[in-house]
Length: 507
Image (cartoon, rainbow, N blue to C red; front, side, top):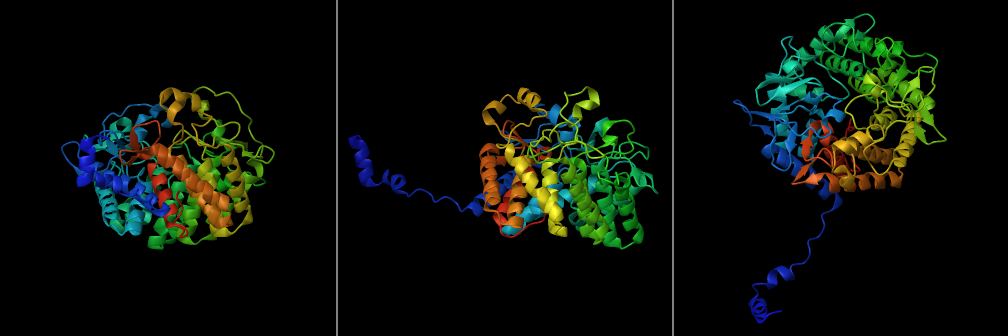
């Protein structure tokens, strides 16, 4: 130590920093809320649509965390894998209120927990702007998995330059929140689904696309339509709206094998494998949406059908010896063993055991959603078969710790994301859903290990996904990206912050 340093220490100039006690670590609950608030503050500061001639309160889907900007053409990276070769699914240079349904839950819940109204106000503004700005010529919203609102050109963009199909998949939409803000536009959207997506109004055959033609009647689009109609019934109390929901939900129920209760994913396809096999699309997203139908209408038929699907999948897909679920079942209950990856559409065929840390947005594997839905069904039905399924899912998921790139597309993902070798980890959505599942499993069973698992996953994910105040969609990417499921992770953190209070499910 030099004489000059000693002199300054004597004067106190250098002493203050050295004498400051180390900062106390934040309580766990505050850490979770702080991480969510930091990301949302970034989103509110930098994430709005200030691109193109017309600016709006819309929240952008892809934001570079290094520059705090939304590039019109983000780096492809894993885009072709996660989007199944359809880059418009990322909503580059734009916004998509459909993909932001989980974000709405986060914004409203963060305002509730923190008493800061800014987050709820941003959600309200995002909803109002989108419902007013982004429509197709047939009156349906320009949102979903094919089209979105392109901020740089102030018009719908995506598939067919914004003229592509209206398609709603997988998510549990916040119809109630949107209805509170724009009831007429929401009713127009839901009635438009009946007009444009139904192929046969007697059998409930529908098409994921709004062309009134036969096509893919996927389980996770049929569930969307049924829940939309069930929600509308909850508002209008018109019997026809409840009938619409039952007719569409009955499409898959009536196509099931009545001896096993296993339903095909897309019965109208014909000879393709998804017309004759059952996947976690049925016990996951489809069943979750049927449970939402039950909550909206209080009609037990929806709940009972969902429970039957979950119990059937658990009975036939669970391999007790391996402690894993099969991904694909014939309708008479036989699993399809692992096959080499096929060509064309067969590349998405989910043979062998289900891929726990899924890579693609859609396709046929939804293990985390199926796990969450088993608990959701237990909460609504108290049927012990659902809790058994949840415990099986917990065992399956734990076998594949730590979270990783997934088996099915792992080699392709490692090639597309060179940084993955150093970062490890998985998508924000996978982390979020897993955290929510184990937290709710703890609530359902009282098992301390489930709570420890949820908190451990949260710590790992925060370490891997946090950058420049943002939460990224994947550890090896520089983007906040809505379709990577950032909002699912943020909501899971808010669930942990609220514990032991139980929030609505993170679906």
